[in-house]
Length: 352
Image 1 (spheres, rainbow, N blue to C red):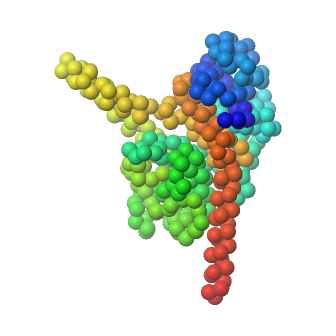
Image 2 (cartoon, rainbow, N blue to C red):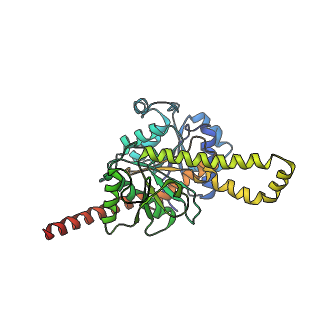
Image 3 (tube, rainbow, N blue to C red):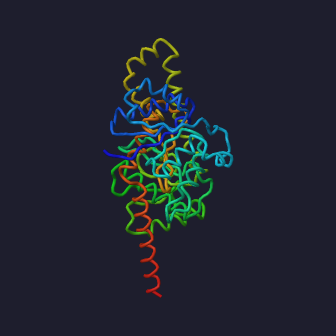
């Protein structure tokens, strides 16, 4: 697999350089053709590379000691886009010095910098944040938007559906991913005007590489009955945090139950293979790597608390999207939607 190199914001995340470099090194051990532009404090990056000698020939360092703070407002961070490790990583994609950027830093700042530097694809009004979540089915579910846009009208939701389906086809291999809009009920009369209008547009569209089947409620997101869940960023972020909280609650409850008595501890030893499988399935590091869809370039957001394995997964997501040319897929699907609308308009005019 021959790919453009990936720019890594080595200063972002809770632990910064050590974990980001270790994660990149782990990703390269799995795919030895990966190459990196490591952006951050040169002295610290070189020290981290000492423990991963195989990374030296595969990496170039872009020195920068200015970092975007975790609680920094996006408007403040934008003023330092040309001096911070995050901004320089994104700008490397704009300049063609890297094919994708990966950062574990401030999400709002990363979105603002990415949108300003890369702009949105033609036909996309707003980029959306999409992530993979585990399900009971054969494939993970993609959910968007997860916080980039607190509000979304019908046009935005339709665009999100197209972008999410394009992403899903890459990661699942499905020709027509099942797409649904997140709602308070599955009946056609439920939800806001924007939701009902978006549903009508998706239902009427032809030629799209997706299968739209109305609405889905939040308790069905992880059942394996849908491949792409579409919503506004406000509702999506709340749903995501609720799902993550429920997963932590279950694991903490099991841990407490298994340590409550000697009999429980024996029971834990007997059921350990099953509990380890559950732990692996719910570990957010195994699904790390949210994507800003709709930009003229690939930008992946790693969770700030991700460990090296999580960062490696985020790097792998970026590489996969480059390999399968996500931006081209989205553009082609938008063109198909435009043609479908044109045919619908012509048919309506002929009927008149």
